Image (cartoon, rainbow over all chains, first blue to last red; front, side, top):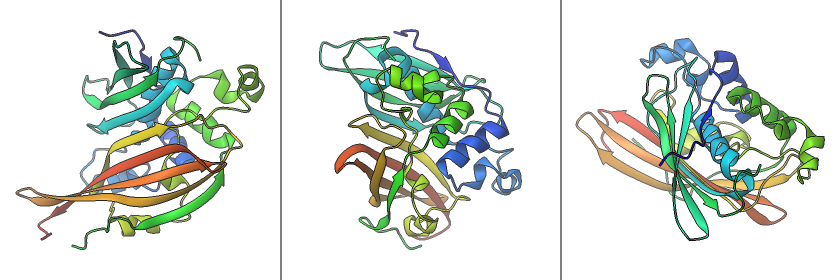
Length: 129
Length: 149
């Protein structure tokens, strides 16, 4: 089931991608250099996968609190083009145990899956931040 | 093609987590979370300083240079990060001093019709005050068209 823990990133402009890359000291020109992207067959720069990681973790944190997040395991499925806003979708697997499994998906504006995986959350009080 | 070697140390580091990282991440992603912007508000919520957003650390931020790329066989015209795993043992905050070491954890080679695909996982432990705070594993897939393994 979808538990409404949705979060949408800002539109990932070149300026936002550059800021994220600078914060991470990301050396990959695929996030900054359109001519490099053209040389490897990409139509333009793409956002770092780390943005999907932070966005999905934030979506989970909005529901369960950042301190409750124990494990994040995400696979990057397709590039996030400049200008796109990523929608984060969560499905919570109900369990009686101490750990809750959250199925997390980052979806592009065209509906394509950008990243997905699981976030394990310690069962604490919900909707705390 | 020379394969990267499991166990190779890509670099060791010691760094103070700063507010600039959090502020840039917060704005870039559009988190709009006041506790990531305002240290007083963060303290009011029980944090010692601004918390580091989950997932906002990555090993190459902390390595001294880009020599890890050659050691790990990563070429940006052929390589993509395909998976990231993070295990949190405690929350991190601005001002924490993290010590770490990044190593090649695994290397896997797969044949396809057009290329060898080399999948390399880089594992990093972030220690704070001598205890592991975060474990991270980043997996890259590198395409080697027409090259023998």
